[in-house]
Image 1 (spheres, one colour):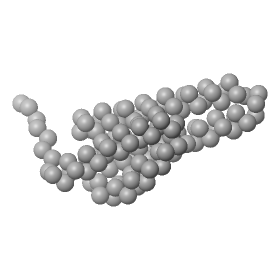
Image 2 (cartoon, helix red, strand yellow):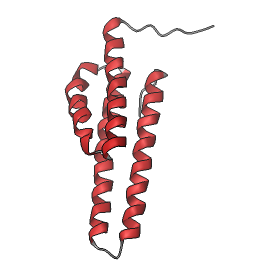
Image 3 (tube, one colour):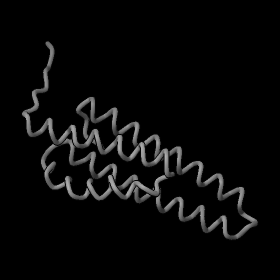
Image 4 (cartoon, helix red, strand yellow):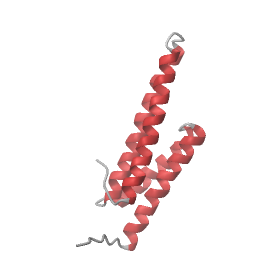
Length: 119
């Protein structure tokens, strides 16, 4: 027996907004290393209440948490960079943060398209 998920128009609109935000985070992340991610982040904060009670709410939370953890990891990398002696470790932390954030954006986008909530 096949199961079909039926979304009403408003829920599909909320889901489409989340898709655009994932893409916005990805584009600004790739071209500015996250410096311009404040734009989609602000939109996440604005649109999150409208998604309350849907799986999309968890995706807004996922994007917001991912951004702030990425910022914290990059701050650690900057502090390590300032020490001069730990520059190789700073590069390692920065690269690991970049890969981790890219993974989170890709995973979230795929799960949103598969109608799965984020944990």
